[in-house]
Image (cartoon, rainbow, N blue to C red):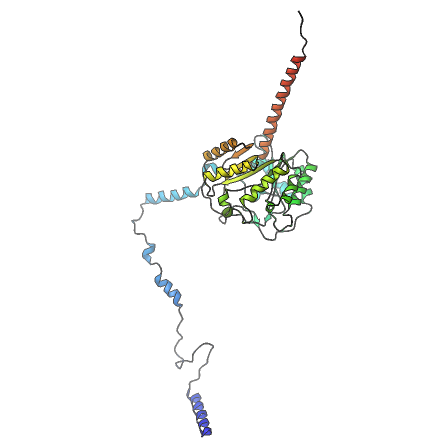
Length: 400
């Protein structure tokens, strides 16, 4: 009986194979008896549903009456006016023999300047010397690639920048000595990839400059060295004239403006510790305006800087380097900047520079030359007065 059933099943299967039309089967496709029919195209249901539920033409068409030619022109002009920079932020392109000479020297010596990297609007004025003829430049050491990514800065970034050039301190010193600058600002990118964050390299560069150009005034605009006192001290004691570290913005905007490894209290500690390490050393910091701060926050920041013993403060307008950087919140007026300069003097800063185009090292050399001349003139007048008084005391008396 079982053998008969097996035979019938085999015959039934073979008959089906003979009668079934020949069709080629692909993976994940069903055999269709109608080979002439074209396969239906699959349409993603979610995409179709999104189209059906999406906006219609009426959503894009304006329900209001069309603008007249005069109204359209007025609207276009208002948009263009908003996009333009205020008149007080427009500067001349840096040109001149001194600027050309400095640019050529920089290329030959393979030096990097923040003036160029940060696209500073005062480059021509500082390099040209200004009214005192005091040529000033800001040299960037330890490469041109930073390990941090602040939202306002146009310097290149990377987690693994190139190795330090061991000959850079000597090369920079020789270049500056040949350059003939009166005042140099040394700054650097952040180097969180190094064990000491570049502190020893910074200090060695200052010592080399002091050896080869002893008359040159040196300002160092340093990173925060992650707030480590043992790394701040070598730079403070290296022989510089001014120790600068920028607070950048008010406390409430630190995380939205600066890299997450930088913060308000850490920067304040750097400035405080420099004063503790060397009380006679001038300290300096800078604040950007126009990034969303309030007047009360700016006032508190200036008070905190003064409490930390900071001698010099500069305030300037934030300028967006590229569209990839954070937007400008507002363009602060020159009158408001003048107000903050007055506040800085009232708070007891030795010097406060505040203006739309002011930057951290703006006219640094001019200020110090002016101060030196003023102090020398004052000292000379005191000496003359003392000599006159001494001569009167020693003059013989005439007896009748």
